Image (cartoon, rainbow, N blue to C red; front, side, top):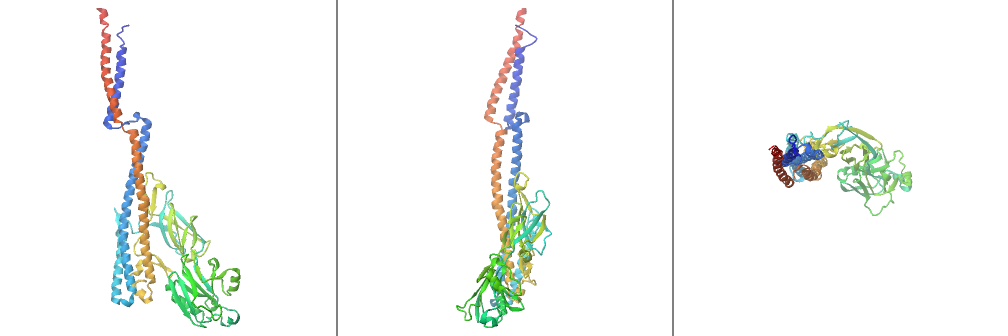
Amino acid sequence: MARINSNIPSLIAQNNISRTSQELQTRLQRLSTGLRINRGADDPAGLITSERLRADIEGISQGVKNSERASSVIATTDSALTEVSDLLNSIKALIVESANTGASSSDERSANQLQIDSAIDSITRIASTASFGGLKLLNGSLDYTLSGLASSAISIAQVFGASFIGSNSIQVDVSVINSAQVGALYLRGDYTGANAAFNGTVLSSTKLEISGTRGVSVIEVVSAADLSSIVTAVNARSSLTGVKAALVNPADSTSGVVFQSVDYGSDAFVSVKRLEASNPNGNYFQTFSFANNGAVPSYPPFPWAASISSGALAAGELDPGKNVTALVNGTLATGNGLGIKINSQELSLELDLTEDLATRPNQSTQFEITGGGALFQLGPVVTAQQQVNIGIGSIAASNLGGKLVSGSVQFLSSLKEGQTNSIRESLQRNDFTAASDILDASIDQIAILRGRLGAFERNVLDPNIRSLQTSFENLSASDSIIRDADFAFETSRLTRAQILSSSGMTVLGLANQQSQQVLQLLG
């Protein structure tokens, strides 16, 4: 059959040429862009997956940059803290030299004080000037802001980390479960039998070895001396031994003597030993420890006999203290003397409780963390799990080395000329202990801060960078598989399309020529 109104072979050839042309354009586009997916129609499902992967890749890339920048901040902070540490060590040497009064003149001590003042001023200057890109690092601007902190309950509060996700503030509830205790021994002052006539006195000349956390000292009291003489001798050496003493009833020597460690906690202890091998007046000198570190019974009268029979008093020469036990927001905190600390992802802090709170079980206090801290976004998604919030307090001399001395918290600035713990004032008291303790606390504070920042860099930032870089590689490879063009495949398909396009043109020409054969029928 021969028809000329409809050239079906030509239509078929045109249709195939159109498809081949579209295929050819697709291959050329992929080879020129290097992408298999250039528009949604190329692979709708693949495009959705690829876009999600690209979003993850961008977030991870920025997370790596954030972590690297945070590492730079930590390095800058640590370099400043290194200088502060060197200055504190130099002050330590000057204090030790000044305490050597037998081999140093007043002029030398005055020169040492000038150096101490200069070093302290330098520490404050470093605290004020250390910065990173305009961000002050050590002046307290990166510390947490606290509200409602009762000085009668908490003497020093240091917040190292707090998560504010979903809230503007964090309430901190501190509840004491078990009280802090000092080491304590009791020496009775009333005797039985023939010795009863000598109540409240020392029956024979006695040498006592008094031991505590700070050292050991031997005191000697003569026969018939009032028990208050033991109290006086022990207290005169408290700075050397860490042990103090007092009559149970200050007005009555027969009430007995209580020996106590100056400090609280399991590291503190009190030991009282009589050095004589024999007691000519019987075993009159016997110290007793309080069961479970219990309180001294009230006076009068002191029921020592009943306390011994009930087990409240037990014969002993040594007694340790106890750490405070407390809950912080329902979590058991680690106690150390009067101090407690807690470390979790939501809250990390250290608190020095006052003696009034730490020695009263079932008492509590509250305060709020209302803001502050340095927030580091370390992951690709803005969630609490991918953020770290740390606090860096001020290291100015007026905030460094807070130490409880004589009932008040004193800082490094108190070592300057004219202040409470200057060389001159320490010499007048003939006691450099307070200055040394404050300085040691300052050195520890800087060392601990450097350690925390170093641990943050080593255990958080560095592993986070490595983990994100690995994720970046794997996600990039996955996205490449979905989105990038396979040049070997695309080239082969291009060659096929070119051949089909060329043959299609030839076939179209033949199809058009076929219609012209009808003219032969008209000849």
